Amino acid sequence: MSIEIVLTPENASRAELVAHLFELGYQTCRHLWDWPAGSQNFHWFQEAEHLSFDGVEATVYRDLDESIWLLHTRTRSSASNGDRQHQNRTIRSARKKFGGSFYNDWSGRNRYIKLELDSRDAVARGIYLSYEMVSEKISSLRIVLPEADERLEKMVGTPFEPLADVDPTRVLYNALFPFAVAAIEHFFSQSFKIMLRHDSDAQVKLRSQNKKIEIPDVYAIRDGEKTIEDVVAEWYSFQNIGSIHTAFKEWFGIDFQALIRRRKKIGIKLPILERRLAALIDFRHGVVHRFALDHGLRKQDIVDTLNHRARICSGKSPMRAIVCVCRGFVFSGSVERWS
Image (tube, rainbow, N blue to C red; front, side, top):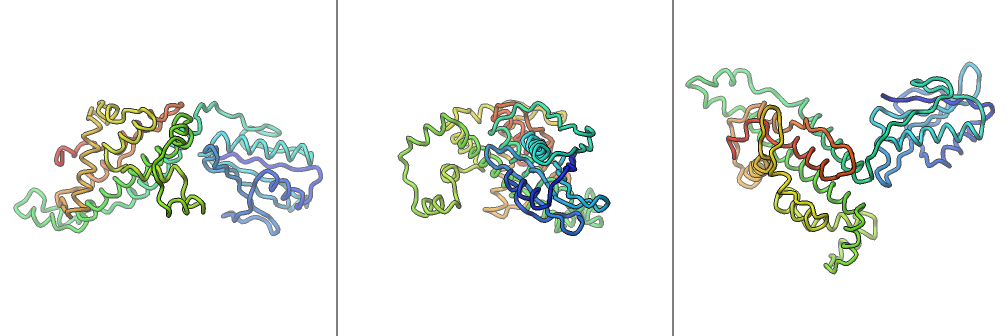
């Protein structure tokens, strides 16, 4: 649920309210809504420690009836505890400075947001954000997946079935497997970098490294285009199970292969994750390196492949989150054709 809080100050000019928001770290931005003339929009977002998920929106605007300046704040339904803490902080500090009262559209008059318990640390929050971004991209793709040509589909199961295999949508379905592997690669790469950045033991190990860094990487780090974690992550391939295992084992002592060799329930099946993941990666390599297309693919096959029903794990164990997410990127039923 989104939460909106509006402060009606006893006495504050627009300039004073704007200055207050700048003091709290807000930056000016555009807004999709139509606000009264003279309104000014702001947004706050805290990248450090992955405290923000969406940030806090704020607008200074004039009440047309009373001709006074008001402060409107909003957090979205996907906001983090850190976002809502800052929304409370914004209203509380403004009220202390300018007086007045406020209205919370969920809790009522002069009621601050009651924060829910969230035990996630910086690593768990960072992995969650990475998961949400990948999930959003996959969801948007699944919505627009085209149906196969109805005329050609009618030939399936008849002597003319080979004609159905020339349906161009089958080629598109094949092309989406590299996308699925790219999603996996991005997720595990991001998870590795997030853990490396926040794991104290890994940071100690990083400081003792004597591996040479290429000059272009040095310049990229200096110019803020890369981080040390980016450079270390490039030492590994995150579209290779063995390399993923090596990366997490060497830096965090996590036996990735042992974890994905466990059976995890997907629907009514209990497949071994390693086989599912390996089959997906192998299929991608076949498409990319050998242009080996499977013209027997159906829409349901790619829907199953892009199925990300796994829920992100709460708590402080980053590997629990990784395993939960991994579960969502494996075949649900049709992988046996390629394994």
